[in-house]
Image (cartoon, rainbow, N blue to C red; front, side):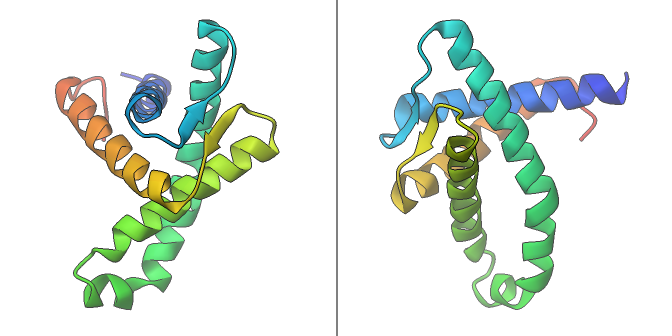
Length: 131
C-alpha cells in the first residue's frame, strides 16, 4: 500500500480518537455547528496533532531524556498533556472551533487519544497501517 494511504489512515485514527475525547472528557470541545463541519474540524485538529507530535515530541524526548529515566517514563504523561494543550491553543489561534480548557482535560484527553488510537491501530490490518 502507498504511504499516502497509511498517512490518511493515521489522520483518521487520530480524528476518531479526538472525537471520542470530545465525547467523554469535559473541557475538550468541538464547537463547530454541523456534523460535516465537526468532522472537518477533527481532521484539521488531527493534522495539527500529528504535526506537533512529529516535530516537537522527539525533540522533547531527547532534551528531557534524564527526566524520562528519573520518572520511569511518567513525565511522558505530562508532556503529552502539554502537547495536547498546545494543539488546542494552535487550533484556537487558527480559528478552528476546537478547545482544550486547561491541564486537567488535556491530561485525560491525551490518555483517551492514546488508548483509542492504540485500539484502532490494533484493529486495522498491518498491510494498511505501516507503523
